[in-house]
Image (tube, rainbow, N blue to C red):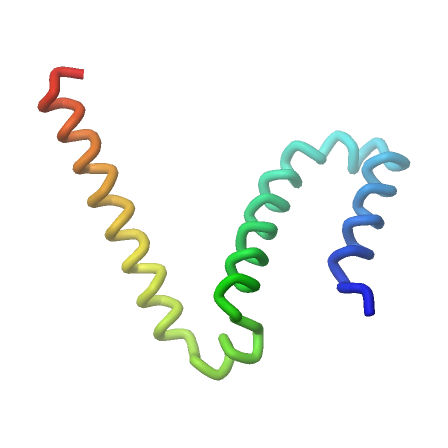
Length: 88
């Protein structure tokens, strides 16, 4: 069977070509599409599905999100501090 996102991609392509309002909104939609593609590839690569995520619950998701945020902020801080310490 054909994955549903293939049909949605074709529909979005047609809408962008035929409807001027969609064509004008395309730059904003591209950001959302990039995030969606990243999440889809992450889910495929890690073997996650909606059923698995529902079974696990919200707490591990929030924990992972918080951990990602802390690691990101600490990493950025370290890079900025090291750049400032090097005189850049």
